Image (cartoon, rainbow, N blue to C red; front, side, top):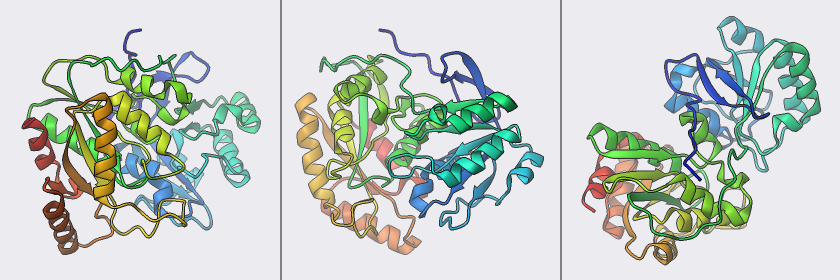
Length: 360
């Protein structure tokens, strides 16, 4: 099976980019976008919209927030008519709620968007194509429904055969702790210095930002590790695949996808990601966060099953809720404990992590 030729969905400075339509044909997702935040209960729930705003700001004209929404990605609030007048072409569901479902309240707004001749794009588990009201409205008004969280290929069962090239995986103490941001920032830093690297998206937000990848949590369990092998094929000896991490080994809801990434990715290097202000695991108030050391030790032990040479090369701290002085002090304290470069790559750049990989 050959590596899939994925298409850039949200590439900058382009108004139409080809993608695989959910019916199997060939179509485009049009920019610019109105980012739909719905009634997101907190800022973390809007991580899809936040990611697009942070990494493809030229593609978003505004945000749509319903009553009770507690998220704000820093874009102008717009209604559907205002967004239409601003040139928006596609309403992108920018919320990643638990279970990935479309509520009755959301459905009403999305139907209205289709009636106003917007297209819709979503990475939720609850597929747009399975919503009869949305399908009917799209057919009547000529809109297109883009489901990103649909595997595009028949992935193999992992075989564990060692591949050429190098790979680094971000693993976290929790969900939504900065694994994707770490990988994207690292890829950008490595490219700036002329290193060979490719960001390998494994979740809906990464796929929507870069336009390629595998929606790993939508792959049948037996094939998840094989899908990661497929996503990170043989490559040049000095090329790095920067694999987007998912979930956490310590998160009882999502640990399975993390282990598939660790074994299927066969990483040569691990970067431990942590958000220091969390009171408990995301969505699990009865579970406390593990220590960074616990994640380091368990992740490394499991990674060395598939790649005995794997090393922990750095730590990435999501300091968005800390001021500059607090952020620097916390990173310094963790670095002293772990003995590896510790930074917030989105806030301070990923150069030290790139240096650590270059030294391997």
